[in-house]
Length: 183
Image (tube, rainbow, N blue to C red; front, side, top):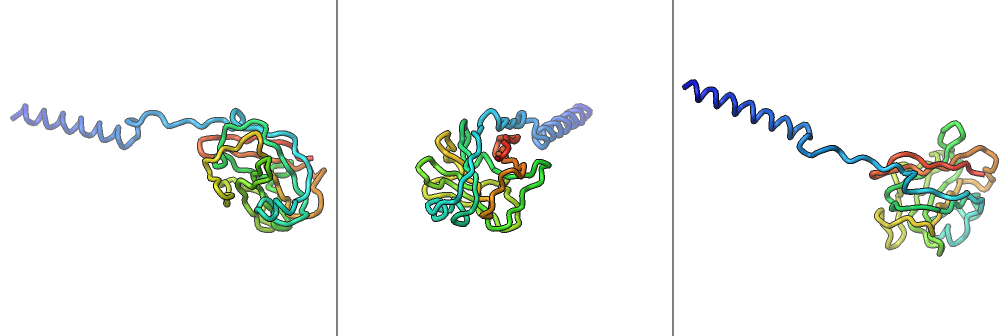
């Protein structure tokens, strides 16, 4: 009888231990670490421009003739779904657009890969990723060094000289921010 009690106690302890390991996640190994965005993505010097008819028609700009920046992608091993973008002031506050704004990934052919339309006053920030994808493009579509990011500032007036900062934000396994001063 004593042997049966000892075996039952030992079995209970073993089952409790195994259950603890499974529930705590120790059985699955370490959680994956994120990749620093700066090792997988970088962009060139932002250039000022205005929204063109082709970009506006495809969703790459909200309003024809709005002031915009075009930022070339220099290095990228990420996909469209791996990055979000924002425009902030030098103090880190999101820039609030006065009109409808837009952030778009545009191929060197002018084709819009993905875009997010931003309501007036909402602030140019798409930290959750793209809202719309162009025909045949998906979150898994590679963002390449032949692409660029177009930021429709939501107004016709230039924002040059306002100490604004363009930021790429790591998503989906990427972490950190890559930023550049806008002209």
